[in-house]
Image (tube, rainbow, N blue to C red):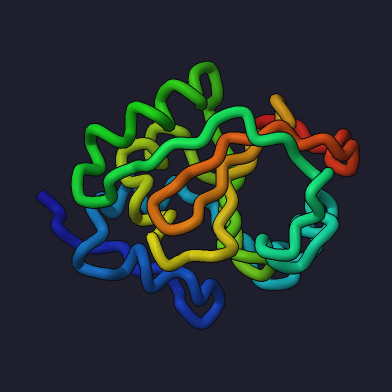
Length: 159
């Protein structure tokens, strides 16, 4: 059996450290299924969807929060049911770690290791569900499921 590990190029994708960490539960094959976007691609994509540079500067009328829930990062398996419920019928989602780091992520991989994507200390992480025009973002251990009210992303198609 080949036990060679897959390492994400942290020079090209600085957020790769999260997935190169020994604490990341994803296998090398699972990591290879994540499509990371570079800083320029991420920034262009971010600005197509979000009319702000930082989550904390999001205009109040940009979205309508439909659900708020506290999730336990230490009991990630139990907390993953929230994401399973919200992502039924989707094959992939877009994940942003702010405006200069993003990835296209298969839903099964995201659900398995959602806490490798979101960290309690993050202030700019957003999971974007294109076909529903919805997003999930967090503050500490509180997660918000929201309808995006802006039509800025009408060109984006769910993968």
